[in-house]
Image (cartoon, rainbow, N blue to C red):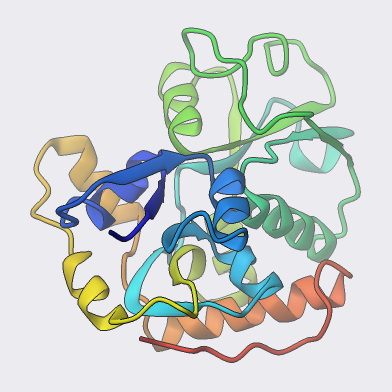
Length: 251
């Protein structure tokens, strides 16, 4: 029986609903570690995991991407972004953290990046720790990803500004950004059959429709691949990866 892992975020649900068997849900960083250790056969994980360790096969035509604002990968701040002195990171997603590093560098910004000791954010009713980002926290900001970002934005839309990483990437590069990919370990057989089962059903509900169709893309085509290659080159340029190119082994 295949061991399938998936990130536990709203944006991943369309890419797992078609799978008939058991699925293990976890945070992106934990899934990456389990996939690398051989504890999972297939997993929907951060795209940076493939750039760092390109031994996997990518399931073609499926990804979590955006071609503009993504809504759920943002820096929450109150001061102007150029005045931010410290950003607390969410280590649950290396893709988001390294995208932020690349964007800050290209915009000529150099705030202190403070790493939390755990990828699991201590949450309150707003979906984020009120001790970390709150009104009056001058010069401080926080990287929010996934469902926590959605909940926080919906509750505090009038109190904070949100620097959307998908939007900033698109402004700089004119390309989609790929946040997550289905990766298959090299020893797994019949990957095409796995891919065929990972098709998403019809979406209803008003917010899900807007979130999935206005902010997210689930294709992994020519433009998404070029966006991922561009991200790889930027990460290599900033010392986040060794080497500057990437080749795709597609199912």
